[in-house]
Image 1 (cartoon, rainbow, N blue to C red):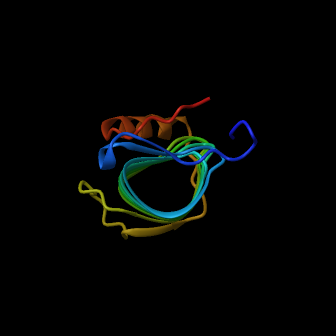
Image 2: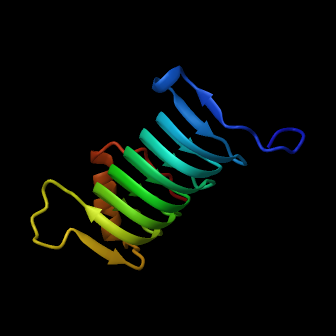
Amino acid sequence: MTHDGRPRPATHSGEGAAGRTVFAPGSRINAQVKANELVLEGFFDGDVRARSVRLEASGEANATLRCDAATILGRFGGTIEARVLLFGPAAVAQGVFEADRIAMLEGAIVSGSFNVDAADRTSAAPPRSEAKSVQLGSEGRKGVEALAGAHAVPEATTA
């Protein structure tokens, strides 16, 4: 919020496509966005094409995201197509999720359709499955943290 109580506008730092685009807390954006690195701290409704997208815990999105890496820490509804997708501990997400790698930290609540196109898949399981919600215990979290570290997804902070 600004000093007079109005929501802060979206901010952009960097030059052109090489920069970082941040939609600040309190912002309400309805748009189609192309960016190198996008950080959503406010409300976003629209379509995104980016190298990386980070939906902060303060953020909420109803969107279609197409990116290399997505980190979801807030509330999300829509479709995500990514190489690497990480749901943080406070994430609440519903939608269609297509990724080479999907990781969920303990506490994340995620429901929808999943299509994981991992190159090293060894089972003959069907490529798409339905899930009501997924929550991981501490053993699952260790594997997820290793996966997240191995694929350079921006780290989620835990309380």
